[in-house]
Image 1 (cartoon, rainbow, N blue to C red):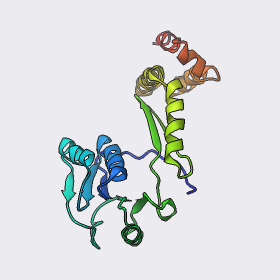
Image 2 (cartoon, rainbow, N blue to C red; image 1 turned 90 degrees about the vertical axis):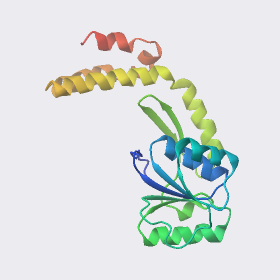
Image 3 (tube, helix red, strand yellow; image 1 turned 90 degrees about the horizontal axis):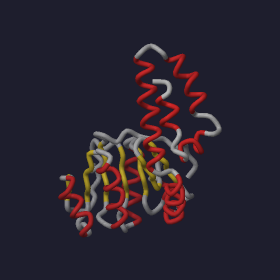
Image 4 (cartoon, one colour; image 1 turned 30 degrees about the vertical axis):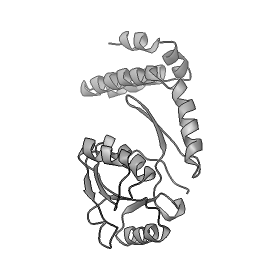
Length: 202
């Protein structure tokens, strides 16, 4: 899949997940944890998904997928273990102009779920050409470096930016940001020196 990575606001997003296995569970968890309104259609759910449904109070219809089930979903995930069913979901999603993630056939879908690393306001997504295990390994390697120090630093920068813009000092913020976020930025964060630099401008 060739595409452009984007970060979607998931709060209140209507997501349909068709399937009740491990893949469906993983994707339902990502969306539910981000605040999406997740609806699941599957005859049977594995234990982990059952637990998630109870924990997040997710809507479940315990039956096979039927034509028309997409309804008002904005995003659709086809994650059954039946290729014919997933293809039918893909066709219907395309006809309804809904974005589809095809778990077993990525070329049939419109979007992919990336392996995600999050620390505070920092979000990093990794895609590895349809090899999710590799994406997970790469994400974990990235996460070892971009740890809580970056979350704290970005939180401080965001607060400074908001305060200066609200005070009508957008031009001053741009000048200071170019000094703070220069080629030494990562080293400064990892040395724990960024907070001191920010404090000097408050």
